[in-house]
Structures are given as C-alpha cells and as structure tokens.
Image (tube, rainbow, N blue to C red; front, side):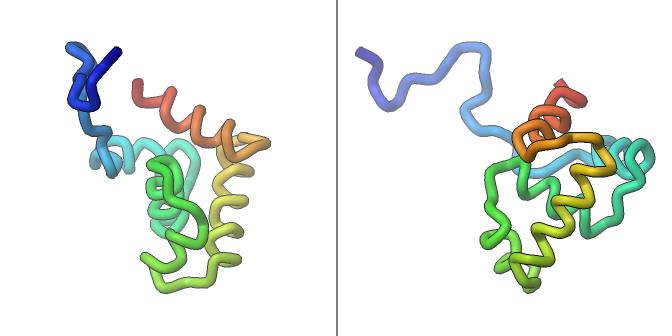
Length: 92
C-alpha cells in the first residue's frame, strides 16, 4: 500500500500551470489563436471549467464556452477531450 507522500521517481510532483512563452507563440502562430483563446485554452487544459475560467477572467461562462468552441474548430478537435489531448501531445 502506497502512502500519500509517495512520489514517482521520474515524474514531477507538480504539473506546470501555464504554457511557456515558446508554447504560447507556437499555438498562436500554428493555429492563429487570439490572446483570449490562448488564455482560455491554457486554463482549460490545466483542469479549469468554463465557469471557473469565467470567474478568473471576469467574463460570462457562455463567452468562455464560445472561445473554447472556436479553439476546437481552429485545432480540428471535435471533442473537448481531443482538444486537451492534442494540446498536451504537441509539447510532450
């Protein structure tokens, strides 16, 4: 049985919470994402919901969902899970 303080020897204990400058430039140039779309994608990929993002950016959750939908179209990801997978695979 593993204790709660177990840490995998090769994996970091904390995931990054934001994209690097290189990742931001790459996504902006390759997929023509706006700054707001990039902000929403970044927060969404790291586990925030549309409602949580809307509170952080002071926008309605519908606006955030529209930004996410726009990113899905630009990145050719039919589902939200595909969007997350495609984004993470680009940088691994």
